[in-house]
Image (cartoon, rainbow, N blue to C red; front, side, top):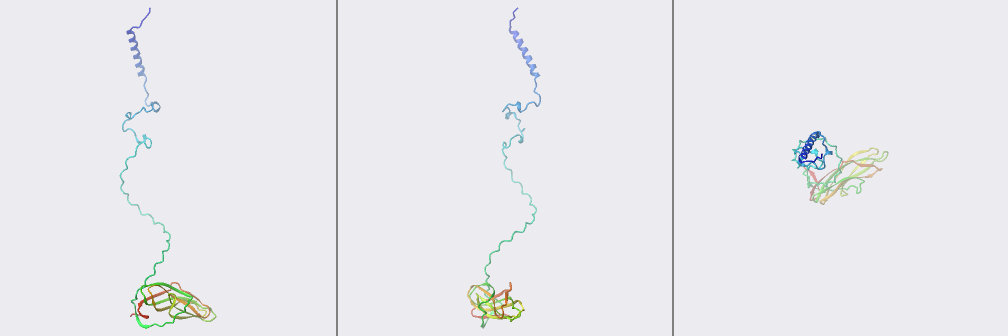
Length: 247
């Protein structure tokens, strides 16, 4: 006997197929935590599938998150403790020599007398000289007084040694000559020598010195004592007269 498919039979088969398919689908379940990066297709996760606020800064690569605006400046911190004193610095270079000082126009401790001055000049070519420079603010007759100390020794076993000293202004002899004698074999240490004169000088720079020269006897040793030079200048006056100390 030959059988043929009729509509009711086809519908029965379809209902049976759907029923069997549903049972199979229910039997297939995805295990928990079994889906990873290997199961995801490229670009399969989009922004709409990400929960807002669920991502952290560490979830992004460096440079992907733009920097925020700079914050306000913080309050100034407290001053730190004073540090230890630093080492002493090296000595600086010596400064330039200062200008020569001005001499007062007059010394209030003196006044000029009417006594004319007669002098015998010292030797013209002293061998030992100690001096310095100074400025005069005005022209006229100026009284100049100067002192220094010299050490001398005359060779033993012979004659005494005679020396002469005096005042020199601008390299020229001035004032009266003074004499001294060094006895043979008896050295003299820092013996005082001085001189004075009244000179007609122009305003401006001048030099003043005390010079010594041996005049007789065997050759003596004569040296100037350091830092022994002193001098004073009084004036000006309209005539070559000596100043006298006021009481």
